Image 1 (cartoon, rainbow, N blue to C red):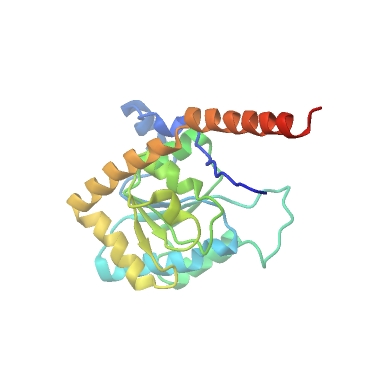
Image 2 (cartoon, rainbow, N blue to C red):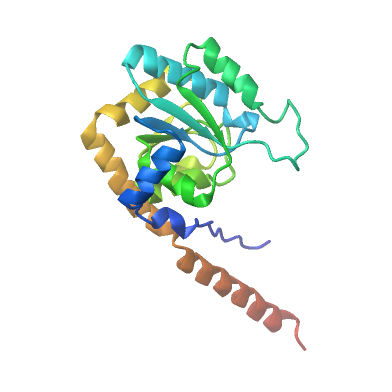
Length: 231
């Protein structure tokens, strides 16, 4: 093509909703949440680097004294062709967490509704994804919209999506990743700055603005076709 224009995705508006006190209490009861937690969402494919995430979490607990949990959302759909070369199995991740002495602190939740995912995002102390590649990085946008500060892989699409509204890390360095997580957990000024920048960055992905631009592109393509090809 002579010209390519990039248009971005947007997110479910549920992530913009501020949860009520009643919703939070019900949510914590249903998921048995009684302390701080770090959140990962994005599925269980192996390029999501989840063994490294669990290893990092173990370092965060042992070397930085984090007393909360790591919640991993996602599962393998029953309709998917399951391959051990593509997906982590939940039981393998659980066994690895036990091996790293954090088995009682790593919780694999499985699939949740969009509303519950929004609640997880709003209540998490931090969102983390150290994926080895991302086509877009929707969870990062969901986190920014939910005012949840993030630690993200410096590979793939995340730097383009989050810009300066997250801490970026090399996804193969567990000690450095743990340090970045600890900074967000303990440095309030940094935390507030990332929340503020994330809130502003999320406005760039306004769904109405994106939809209007897509329609404009279709119209431009159609008009160009009429000029060039109609008799």
